[in-house]
Image: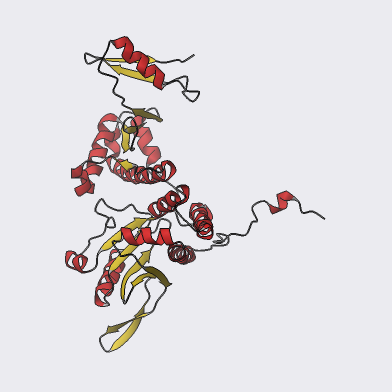
Length: 360
């Protein structure tokens, strides 16, 4: 008797099963093991991760829960980093500790300091931290104080799960993995990371204060909820970073969130700038720089009207009459995908003209 296809739906065996994960601790253990397994087995992915951590080329070996003896006075105890990555070439090797958090768990200062110090004491070459928090512009983990003296001895690199997912998707979509079995393993891991049941990647959230912020925006009184707005702005900035990584993977291009140099050096300055714009203009904004695109993609959330605007600035040809410039623009919009309510703003230099465009 043939089996019913409906009974088989969703029951296909997976390399990294996500069913019956009952706790964050279990999710963390599975996430660490799956990541290290793929980094070890999929050559191109492993080399990419090691290169980001400024490690050398060579044979990659990975380990989990390795016991390390630590002398505490007259007594000794065992420490178990979440994972260790080891690269060997000739008679030399390079090693890195892996510290992992999943879901909404954040890296802890005390734990970070402990493993950073432990790495230095045992000749470990780097510390790689992984969580759902986005890395700072300098690649360090956010909201942690990093000891500069230890950093010179043991470099620290932070990778968000979104960054790891983006790296894997980019390799997969570019067909950059030579071995078909390794390609299949990488695709299985991509599916596992994207599965909410794996409890690894935290779904985007704008926070518990979102409704109050919208209410204050509707009442033109955003100053009354400045504290709540600050939390929303931080979440919005983190969301933009995630979107940049997903666009990067989807387009196969190095999409970047446009941030000034001053804001890169001082992340809190960016939060202050976003907060000031949000309160004064009632907007949450962000700009994406996409290689080979006609211009930067701007995204604006209008809090009062609860709407989102996407826009791109395109420079028209500088030669010829204005009619030629208009015809040039219309040629760019000849597509079945252009919406009927598209709005084009034309800046003639002496003023701004806003007009609806309907194509026939």
